[in-house]
Amino acid sequence: MNHASPSQPHPDEWPETQELLGAEERGLPAGRHEFHKEHLMAQIHDDLRTTNGAPAAPARQRNPFLRRNVLLPAMACAVAAAVVGGFALAGGDGGDGKTPLATGPALTTQVGTADAKAAPELLNRISLAAADTSGPTVGDGQFLYIASKVANTYPKTVDDKTTVVSEELHSRQVWQSPDGKDGWLIEPGQTGGKGMTLAGEHPISAAYNALVKLPTDPDALLRKIYQDVDENRDKEVPRDQAAFVAIGDLLTESYPPAKLGPALYKAAAKIPGVVAVDDAVDATGRHGVAVARLNEADGQREEWIFDKKSLGFLGERNVQVNPTEDGPIKPGTVLFTSAITERAVVDGNKQLPSQAG
Image 1 (spheres, one colour):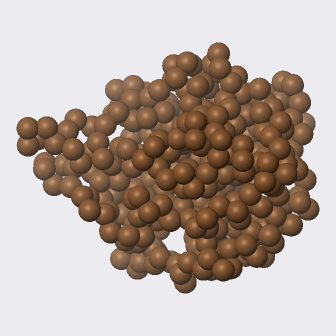
Image 2: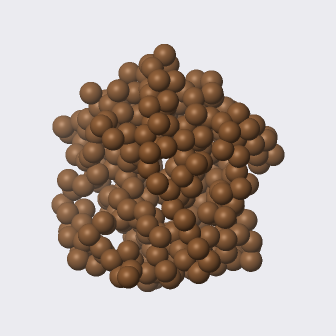
């Protein structure tokens, strides 16, 4: 059964995180917060590079609204809006109004056993459960609100000594207009306390209005995903892995319409290499079952975590499964962890669900 090593506490057990949680829950609705942030492997490689024998300067923090370095502006990311809107962020060094995040020991887990034969049945059950769940209807002028808890793990170099650290578990709140042209982001360590605009000339491609136009036939949907993968992916990322990540992105910081959700799971079942994992833990410590796929290129496994009873989506994590050749990341390290805590439709940008009505 997956669980954090006794010597490596879960992020929500760190003392500084306890203080953070207390402050957050006073300022946010009872439903709490949610997730989604770019995978930091690019930052990891930057942090490990040296120039003339000296450690490289701290890597520029990528836009936190972007997903990992895979992908898919056309299906799963806000790439166009990020670039044109001009809100790429530098690291939170304290000079730009952001709050640096405290770090603690690297979060680790026991790597769960992968079962390829169980994956189709599990995804079929998840698809059936999703079909019984009403999806949102978002009108003009409304916003999707998605709250999560997230944390990343990365190498940190101080005085020529590199250690692997994990961020404190922290909240992330995103608002998205249905056309993808407006929104707001609040995330400690990435934005100032009041957050930052996501408004841009070009719409977010995973916006609600774009999702309702996607095919709901699983075969047609998967063909569309692979088409976009072939046009937009980082060529270092295997094609099937990029397709799996693309679907995962649509399960996290977007809100698939009711008919699209079941199709996404049925499409995922058709991707080679997809497995079931009998136990996985989200960022808040909730145990569930997982649908996962190993990226052979970097030895990382992406896991989508679902409630064991309801099969509702809980969150995701990336786990280092195989040893790395040129870095300190060991098998069992949790590189990214998230837990969705609330999704809602609200009537205005920056409005909280508790303020609706």
